[in-house]
Image (tube, rainbow, N blue to C red; front, side, top):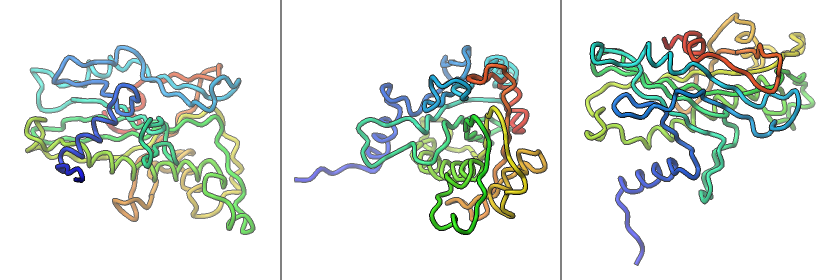
Length: 273
């Protein structure tokens, strides 16, 4: 006799599997409704392929997170708005024993999810996709290379845009697993909007503007890098012309292997607080 499973059991089993301590795909960092608060220490994002390589961006530390929480969290005297929960999704983390579900293909390093209450029963879930790059470059995208080059080989800016697109699609799948409409979760009657945003941390840029193909993702990303624009249009499963806000942050540290940035600066630049 074959096994028979309830839909809720399948969904919850997969979600529990992703939260398994051994793999740490989904980590809850802060929950206003409980005593969970793991933000006294920095949020660290690593680039494993650069580990031990001199001059390569290996780690970004997002610091002073607790200060942001103290100023923007919900309180007993201000229950109408504020940050309520924060999660970290390790998109590039290998999932052991999960053949058929690969997380690292064309995704950003992590996604940082911030649930913010706007007013009674109105929430925004900010999904911040975070990518690390040592150097921003492009390669001239000639017609002879067009047929054989994949997006990731055509230039890093184009590849980052593709990573954002794939990460949005991946996050949509993960978000549908979240059983937030269950009355025991406390969100059954709430209105939750989702906004995707992108962040790129990098050391240096050596881009020759004359080599950028017109109307390409390279050009769109370059305009954002130059702060001429802050919106990237992508074709995702949500919309053929989906728009997400993006910010580049350059490493100001003299030690190029690591970078530190205040949580406040990121959230302000992305218009979250």
